[in-house]
Image (cartoon, rainbow, N blue to C red):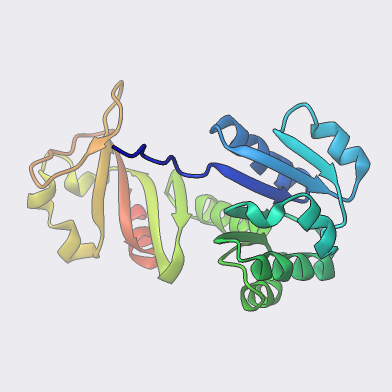
Length: 222
């Protein structure tokens, strides 16, 4: 019987500034083998003992990347900071290598569009996304907020008074507010999956999913 192959758990992170180094350390803690690259010798030396492999390299130099076998990695993250040209050229090279999954950090929506055009499979705007998330927390009644693509969001909020003492089926939240309660947490307990038979009590925390506007409207009930 043939041995079952384990998924390739390697990733290359290019750019070891605050965002890139934090991401690389998180990957390492999750048992991912990380090759960390940066043109700054100071940054590379700073993370040499924390990451699996590190190297000083100009990531816009295709041959230099080939010598480090970057083309053999299944995942890559372009975490380059303010150098837009280097960010775009590096992403393009990784795309030409045929790397299956490329994440790239963008500084603006225009930058994000260019990165997608040159081959990034996933683009993140850390500063914009965090600012947007915090704005929702500041202005609303929600305790946490995550927005995904296509205006879809998940929100953590306290159970509003109108659903306390009822089961989720009885409260008819989906028909009234267009949202779904996916998980619930009671004081002193962990989160559990919510069902139509789950009764909501005062002080319960709810994880609610739906369109961003609908989840915000529901959180305002608390």
